[in-house]
Image (tube, rainbow, N blue to C red; front, side):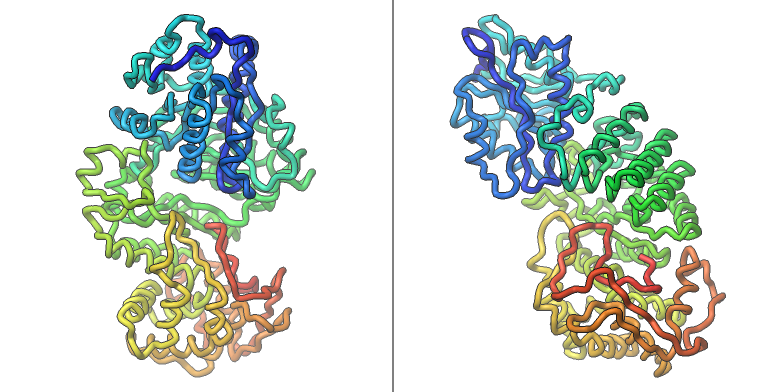
Length: 637
């Protein structure tokens, strides 16, 4: 297939269409495409803008915007170029749209970049052969590559596509039909030479009152974790956008009333300038009311800067939870994923600091890593439980450009991948093991993170040395086996957990009206769980202690029809009892230095939620949010 010369023999300017397409507005890749478009406009003092009609960014695919309607908006009937950026969440849409554009306009030039475009030798070529409607694949940073591509394609030579040989960092179809890989492209050293699409007006026509936006403060990652394509692509010095530029972008974003901001750095909080940026975010929010919430990937090796950044953001109302990038604590798994240079003791120091500052803690825990086992996942979740860290589970996907995707690595760890691109099995766990690990995590999520039996479990571990995850694992084994002694549990697992119906990349719990039987009569389940605990661990609780725990769990769990504010009267003061745990960094810090629950006098527990639920239905949308349990003086995450 031959690439045409876009300007040759054409009376009108050909167009360049940057197209950001996704299923939801929050997933639109408008920042990378905006960066490229802004750079194309100013490249060599606007020389490309003289040759091409560089169109404004096209936002597409969301809110019922069909591919057909998108394709119709993009038609020009000439050899226009289309720029697409692929991530795991929009890659399939990009391919569908590209195929449609090429079918309707064979002269179109489809240029595809982003982390879902495979970079390894042989794999990019196979990708282009599998998708003949893609003309050029861009590997790595796209700004300079796309400018040079468009310059090459504007040649008046008979075979202008041949000029692409001089453009590094791409794989393309030559004029004689061969697939050609050019030399590697050096990273952009001076990222401040790239114009900001926010500050240059690239987004002005549509960027207002949006829910979610993205900001870059640096590029690069010094780590080489095998499951991630970030470090593999940029494993060298981090390049920084100037604080002045970043603060100006924050001002712009706030002036346009964007609610949520995602800082798309690999390690926010690693650099000294991140403290200044965090302070600017808080100051702008205090002055304008925007943005309302911040999300990011925090630095892996926590230190003074990161702890200060998180404290600033938390106290400024942008970050309700201190995020710790734990992933796993298992030494064999850390070695397998080349993350053993990040010590668990470093995280423990961070957690002690956050606890002293009263900052709730959360961490990502990955499920399906090479080297992982059922026992190691149980240990990871127990570690988080002990440190009062809310563990957010993520299923491990095979990113096409991660070191994990490299052939020798896949063979070493015998990695199998399912149809969704998720790790299905490795040398350390079978597909059945993985299914069990997913069920174990959902069990933890339901009973601990969402608070359904959280205080009961903490009490048992504190006073009876029953490890929470050991109890939950035995409960899971019982319901999988259909143990007739736990009928409510069996129904809960079958109808609400419904493990066999859950799919996708995210381990997020949800349920509908089928859960009403459980939550409207939680007392029955509490008695069943206590009987199960007695049988498995041979313990007995004082009657008033058990009544306190049951009433506490029922109070903090939403119940439809209950009048709020609600005050529970307890035989023992649960608030003062659990305050001992809230004040300690971890259970280990308490040792035996705490007052048993039965020694506390009677007390009351007030539940006054900001919003009262009208239905038992629940959909967990935010991985670091634990918003089923109602707010109370007890809650610590």
